[in-house]
Length: 464
Image (cartoon, rainbow, N blue to C red; front, side):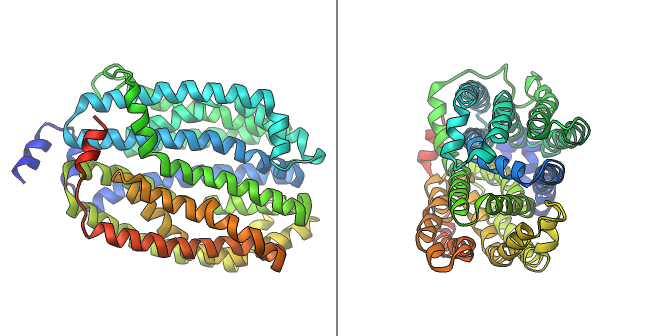
C-alpha cells in the first residue's frame, strides 16, 4: 500500500483517478463517454445506410457492403496498433515509466500512418479485382469501385484518429476523446446530407463525407498530443522498432475480432449471393447497420474499461480490476435483454428504414433474419467483455481464442452445412450457435484466470 501511495504521488490527476478513484465513478467517467462516442459513430453509419438506401437504392447499399471487408482489413490493422499502443501506455503510466509511454505513442503513430498509406495505394490500384474476389457482379461493380477508391484516398486518417483516441483515453482524458469523436460524427452527418441528398453524388459522396469527417476529428485530437506539457506527447517519444512487435502482439486479439468480422461479412456475401442474389446482400447490409448500433454500447464499454483495467494491472491493484469486471457484467446483462427485445420484436420496423416502399421482399427477408439473430444478443456481449478483459491485462492469446471462435472459426463450420439443410434460415442460425459455444469456452477460461489474477513478470519486461 505504501508503495502504491508513492507511485500515485507524482502522477497527473487523471492517473490518480485511475489508481484510487471510485470504481462506479470511473465507470461513468471512462466507460460512458466511450459508449456514447461509439454509439454516435454507429448512428453515423446508420444514417449513411438510411440515406444511401433511400436516395441511391438497395443495390448501392449492397455494393458498399461488398467493399466493407476491404475497408475492414485497414480497420483491423488500426485496431491492432491502437489497442497495443494504448495498453502499453496505460501499463507504463501505471508503473511510472513515462519515457516508454512516450516512445510507444511516437512508434505506434508513425508506424500506423506509413502502413495505412501503403495499403490505401494498393487498394486504389487493384480495387476492381478485389471487389470481384468479394463476390461482386456487374450490377454492383461500378458503385463498389467508386466507394472504395474514394475512401482509399483517406486511409491514413481513420488510423491516425483511432490511434489518437486510444492514447488520449490511456492518458485519463476520456471526455476529450469523446469530443473528438462527436466532432467526426456530426461532420459526417452534415456532409452526408450535403453530398448525397443535395449534390446527389451517390456512393462517392458517402465516401467523401466519411473521409473528410475523419480529418475533422483528427484536427480536434492532435493538439492534445503535440502539447509538451501533457503526460504523453509526440515530442518526448522516440521511434523504437522493438515496440512494434509488442503492440502487434497485445492488440492482436482485438484486430482478429475485426478481421474475423471482415471475413464473416465476405463469407455471408458470397453465400447470400448464391441463395438470394443482390437482395440477400441488401438485407444483410441493413442488418449489419442495425447490429452496429445495438452493439456499439457493449463495444464502447469494453474499450472504456481498457484504460481502467490496464492501468491498475500495471500498478498491481487486482481488487480494483475484479470490482470493475463485476460492474461491467451487470451492465452487459441489462444491454443483452434490451438488444434481444429490440431485434426480436421490432426487427421489421427497424429494417424498413433502409428501403423504399416497394422493396417488400427485401424487407421481409431482413425481418425474418432479425427474429433469428436476436438470440445471439443474449450471449455476444459477454464474449466481447471477456475478450476485452484479457486484452487489457496483456493475455492476448485467450482473447484471440474468443475472437477466432465467435468469428470465422465456428461460423465457417456452421456455414458449411446449415444453409444446405435449412436454406436462408440456416445462414442466420449460424450466428447465435457460434456465440453460445464461444461463451462456454470463454466463461471457463475467464473463471480459471480471474481466481489467480496477478501481474505477469514477463509482461512487465516485454513492453520495456
